[in-house]
Image 1 (spheres, rainbow, N blue to C red):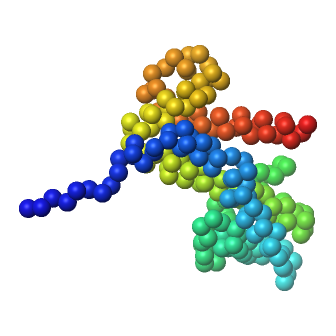
Image 2: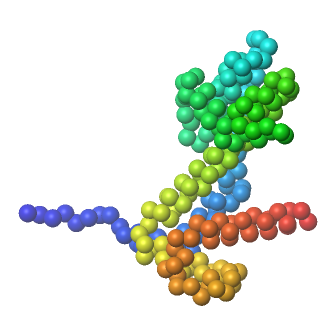
Image 3: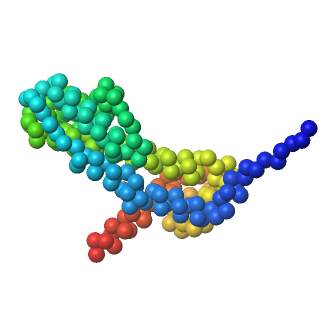
Amino acid sequence: MRIRRSLSLRNSELVKSPKGTIDKIADLLSEERISAEVDHLLDQAVQAFRLELDEPLSYSSFNQVVGEFIRHVYLTGLRLPRDLSKTEALTEAVSLLTRYYRGGYTEGYEGALLDAMSGNLEGLELVLSRLGESLKEVERNKYVNWVFADQFERLDWETKRQLVITYFNQYGTFLPTQLRELDPARPVDHFHALITDYVSSINLLKQVFKAK
């Protein structure tokens, strides 16, 4: 019996530069990158949507509009487009409004319906705008989860540990003393938080320098 030699490489061989991997993750999670990958497409799709009503706003026409809005945005504004049926689009719209909608004095799907009905077209436009922002939040979270899954979670434990060690060596001076003194094996499960805090600090510094 002839045994074939596996051509697959160990994660540690694939990640030849732990610092390079950390820098890549930081770049993928930067505000500029997330904005380009997620926000830009969504903003374009929201702005391109044309609100048309053939009748006075009602419960039925409200559902029709929010469903059409989600169907349009999912098809033209997502990194991975989805072609929803009308029923699927309405279900998605109701779910998003129920979970995320917050008006001045209202919340949820019923609150969005009330705000739309009480403000005529301006109220409905406000609901759609907030629906777009909610979708942006959802897609940003999906993108961040994808970055960590692709760049970190798929690695073996030892390679993850090497990334944490490299992170501590590079940026440990900015971390609390008690954290720097930990065994690098312990913070492996908290790598997401470490990198997220690091990227947030970079984004804050960029904003400060832009303001000057």
